[in-house]
Structure formats: C-alpha cells, structure tokens
Image (cartoon, rainbow, N blue to C red; front, top):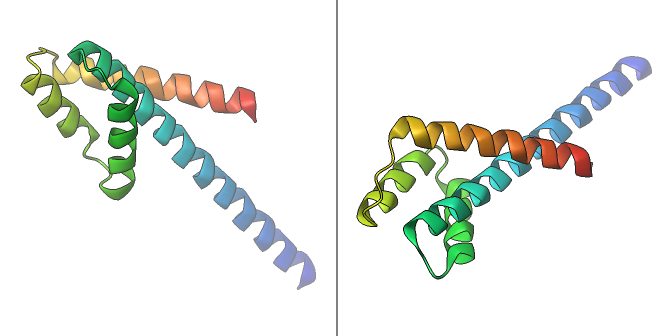
Length: 103
C-alpha cells in the first residue's frame, strides 16, 4: 500500500501544481488584456484598471469578455467580440509562455 499511497500523493501534487499554473496563467492574461484595454480606452490609470479587472475575475470568473465589451463601449471604442476573443487568446498564449520560461 505504501507504493500506492506514494503514487496517489504524487498525482495530487501534480494536479495541484497544474491548477496553480493555470490560475497564474489566467491571472496574467487578465492583467495583460486589462492593460491593453486601458490603453485603448485612453485611461490615465491603466495599471489600476488592469489590477481591478484581474481581481474581479477571481471573484466572478467568466465575466471578463462582458466586462471588456461594456467598458470599451462606454469609452466609445468599437471592438468586435471576435477581436476581443482573439486578443484574449493571444495574451493567454503569451502568459503561458512567460510562466513556462520563468519556471
């Protein structure tokens, strides 16, 4: 049973590490898209906007696209949902690459 318990612990550790990396990747992506949106909207406090956006995603996941569409529309910036989705995918890839290189 000891070998089986060790295997189970190793799998639990691997799963926890994967989830931690996934969380960090999405948090980094959210900050990146927040910075981009802040610049596009011409905000003075781009970093504050990006931080707020990333923090909200921890509390309310899956609301990022709606929030971005609303904020950009209020700022008078025309961006399609497809463009936002593509930009989010690009930032996700970039965030993933950055975290892999730093690990």
